[in-house]
Amino acid sequence: MRVDVVSIFPEYLAPLRLSLLGRAQEDGILQLSVHDLRDFTADRHRTVDDTPYGGGAGMVMKPEPWALALEAVLAELPETNEAPTLIVPSPAGEVFTQALAEELAQEPSLTFACGRYEGIDERVLEWAAEHFRVRPVSLGDYVLNGGEVAVMAMVEAVGRLLPGVVGNPESLVEESHSDGLLEYPVYTKPSSWRGHDVPDVLLSGNHGLIARWRREQQFRRTAARRPELLEGADPAEFTGREREVLRELGYDVVDGRLVRQ
Ligand code: SAM
Image (tube, rainbow, N blue to C red):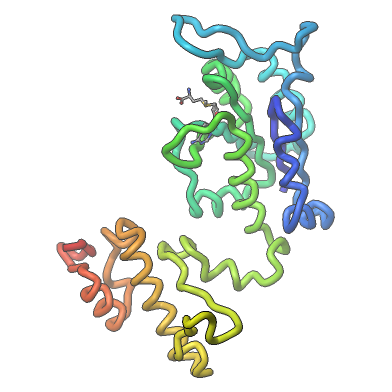
């Protein structure tokens, strides 16, 4: 996958060269290019922002450097039938989820436009829609200073799904959010530590019992920490024992859907 990031702080993205994603770049699985938006300005001060029309606090990113930067990225992207995807990080975008990460991991390329200040002149998104599939995406319901941290999170979440990036692909299957539930608790040696013991079942060697315990823990943890993830689920997706656990946890079936009482 090819990833292009446009930012006024290209050095902010340096951590993406480390660890598993760094190795993915060495192995040619991921090609990451970071572009400095200021390289696409024409004035001595390399200006990328100006005051907002209509007044108000803060500055807005000027459209022209963005158009030139995105045109330069487009010129480097290989020809494809579909327009390439442009992700515009924004607290006003759709919320980034594991499902979206999985969808984006299928793309041959992703381009990210990191906003700063009060954001990017809206006309850039209108213009970009003529060349890209534009998706404003939010990391969550809070406001960051710029898009770079959001891009790092998104590129890491997408990048680790690319074949060959994570050593054992099995470890991607049972993770939190891969099946709508949170992951079960995990333990390592020693089996007894500062008065806290690893649950006996994990030492039993009985794989059937371990799998059942882990599944039950997924329900317990999800109900305790993120009950809304179970709300509205179709109970037919769960086994009889799982429905029993869900009942214990306060869920009931109403009109064929799980509802927390
Ligand atoms: N005035 C904007 C608003 O209220 O929607 C917020 C601008 S924010 C200070 C500057 C930039 O940070 C945004 O253009 C965006 O690129 C990035 N950003 C801030 N919060 C974000 C979030 N939750 N998810 C993704 N990007 C975010």
